[in-house]
Image 1 (cartoon, each protein chain N blue to C red):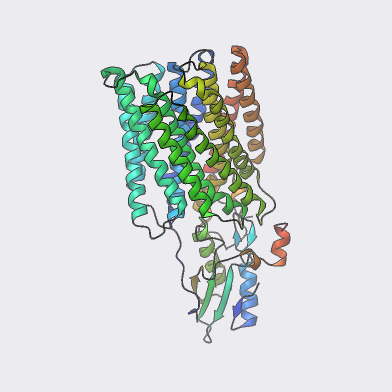
Image 2: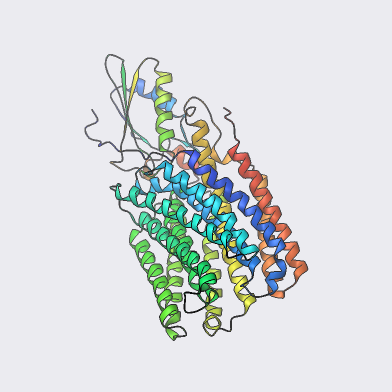
Length: 107
Length: 429
């Protein structure tokens, strides 16, 4: 799923939290869908930087998905500020879907 | 840290308070229209210019089709133009004007009173469409994104405005006789600018965006969509010009061919989207919508076979009635039955779970309606639709009544599921 990070341990915990965020249209979580691009953590343990995308910029559920991703990290990393960067460059493509995700979609 | 990734922006959704009333109004109109259908079965054995048929057609076209499409487009336009809707007040005004105008107009036709009920009904509907058109134009003018889907919606709304204005003129022509011929002679223009200009262009514009989105398709072909846009608009403009200035001319087949070609290309577009989809399992609502794309071709093939008769003023009234029935109860209704349960659950899900998503497992939007009622609705709809066409062709009033009752059941089931979705309360799984 190619998530760039500067802290592998925290990234694993964060991804586990983000697996609870489901794209309601597809029914698949945003990690297996490949929407998470980058997760960085500052050294003071105060800030989390999440860079993610959506399957399309036109996604009507975009607000809910990004809000849910932010909320999932804030709940897991209590007291840390989550800074979310929504990007469409590079745009999402189906090659970002994990093997688990492809099985889920019967692809 | 994030220098490599330029930020994207999210489209602000239109509040459910604007959209949901349109859906509820449309659902009720569908039920009322099916009851009107039962009350008008005798008329289906006569000429299409019958007060009950006019009332039924406007109940279906405005109360059902237009209201739900206006509701959905208030939600979808920001998604298409990547900008929030210009004015929520104008959206509310548009709803209330149409909500008052449509029953007046339908009543005016039903009792054939072309005085104040039809005139005020028409005025209110016209004002409603003007409000929507202004809202759309300002929203698009402020948007940086210019895409083919937005142009489809803009052109469709311009055709709707023209259709409603022309329709109101026809109502006035009953009283003041200012047109060269009687209003009946101009009905084909009014009907086709509405059906092809408004419904077809809008459905293609929005559908070409939503179908790949729902299927998670890799297919994209804006060039093909522009060709379809050109073919349908050119076909419709030439139809109006030929009808007004060269009636009976053999060129009349050109617009029919242009629109038919546009439809075939759109079917090909949908097929490619389907073929190149990532999501292999397609849900029932999308399947119905895809089937309805094919259903677009049925009325047009029907039209080809009766166009000659239309221009020679020797049209079989029954054929024209079946043609109209296929359009409103077939193609448009099939799309709406499918798409309602694809779009409305999302709107309500966003409202109910916006603050709860990410905190635990929530139901999916498709869990917000009852799938058994949905399946039953589809079965009754297909049975009622096929039986009605058969009965209309045979001019059998008993069968027409049975078919109309089956369609009332469809409408009741549809209303039940719409209310189930709208009244959904949050529950974490």
